[in-house]
Image 1 (cartoon, rainbow, N blue to C red):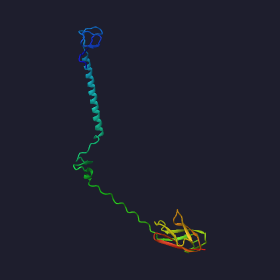
Image 2: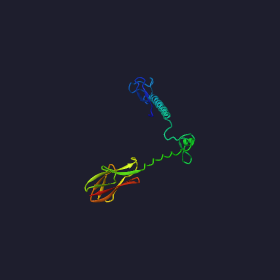
Image 3: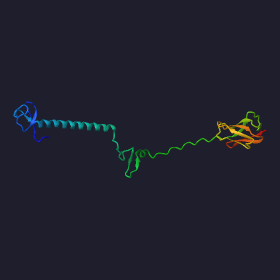
Image 4: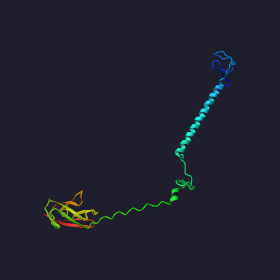
Length: 209
């Protein structure tokens, strides 16, 4: 603000320095209703300050209303003894109000035991020309399909096939069904084919000529 106040001409309504006794624009003297321009400026500044204060008050009221709608502000902690919720006691450990009210939580019940595996009760070796015998004769280079019949059929067991003399007869296990194998005569002689599953076993004598 200038140290020398300005006055406003009552005739042309223009402001000029207070050191002058006449309006430099229209020549009117200050006695014709001239007033200080600083008074007009101060009134305008006061109105602006009042408007800013009112705007700040409105913003404060809106902020308080929003906080009330959202609940407690972020970072607030529950006071000890207020009921439920996790709080910190004097020692810095967590206390759960729900646990104090409802008692300590119980461990989950143990899982039910898994069902026992079904045991194999019997096993036998079958082939297409089987007529109730446990021996067979095939020629060198000939092949024959064998399969194991297990009871009960849904028994849980690993099936293993073996041949005592691989040079007489060899077996090839079916990769998709281990109950089936392909028997092949390799050289003259005799061998025993054995299948085992779940502690049970069966054999067949194979002659190759």
